Image (cartoon, rainbow, N blue to C red):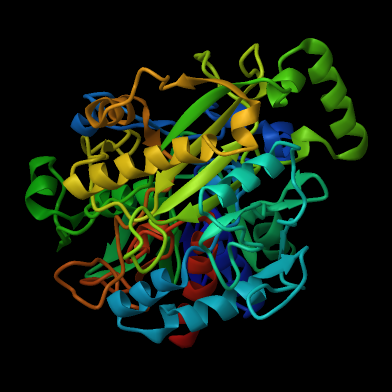
Length: 537
């Protein structure tokens, strides 16, 4: 595709959609290439429908890691959005910014206050249209509607929060407010009973501007160079190779696809690229390195009272909630399965929470091979209390399997590869049991099913989470930003070092992993990234 474009954006995910909106608002002519297709699908728009998208190749890259020693040699499944809106179209919709201290870390790593907490907080307030209203932390009137965090989505949320308080974890009214630590109800990117993805909030308004050209089903194979300047990208569309040219190119493919495109284009570890027959444009060993992700596990309980299992499992229950959703856009299908949660510290000397809780009034012990069984839970009253680590010290990497742009890259997760990560996870799973032992939750629990009461000593608990834990789908930092050229890929303006005309704007550019869900900071990356791009001219 030839054309007179100011900016080429590769990827229509969370950051890319925001970037397209802000650049077109500023009068820029933008071309966007997206490998996936339309997000106008029923199970994308229905919030609880994301279980149906978990293994759907029509909207999901469906990556698998290499066998991981930290997970007893098992590989792990990593879904990533291959659709307009990217992973914001298939995720669990939790809106959590992370801790203020995370953004102090970003400022220190980048060397720029543009990525610090003050800038981030004001950007979030501008982004949000929060149902709970505006205050010093929340915003109202922005393009992205955020559903309320005040109303419990299920009756069991109340005894869970009471048990958290009894366990020493105080109630917090807003994880994105003055205090992240505590237990409470998650805010969700849901509007009028429909998923409010980045595509819905940002990309469609950009398309209506007339300054954005979008090509779906366009798989970028490599970047195009004029000397040491990137001038666009080559892509395959409808069986043929095409060229897209623009004044500047921005990679927004995410933590897996962005380093893959960089390496296919000769920007990456020089020796490894040469070994695959790829000409080296920039010998950059940090591309694909520093992979960081949250690792999670669920503890599952049989209950003496009804849970969502009792509603979603039988055919008549499916019929009832389905009709309620179709007629009124309400009920269990109109919310995320993460009904509540929290943030806590395994060590009181820490300066911020290092663990995140998830409360889900359903259970899925019986596996299904073709879907994440959210809509087909266990045939008994069950629930799960889960957690994930906020700032793991383990690091993985992304490598090319070969020079084929259509081959999945090799993902090395390296979960629990440090003693620190193992030690804090051990303390964290013990805290789950501490919560479950508190009234009124204890009065409602019939038995612990997973891992079960026989799993008691430290060695058994460690063996259990190595066997049962997995990603919570927050890979980041594989083309990270930093002031130190020796340990980063892009500078504070998101410019890829060693070439001109190329930037990265997505979760791969995170200087460090945010302690919480990553969709909000990915959207923030697009918002602040646009400011860095517009500031350059």
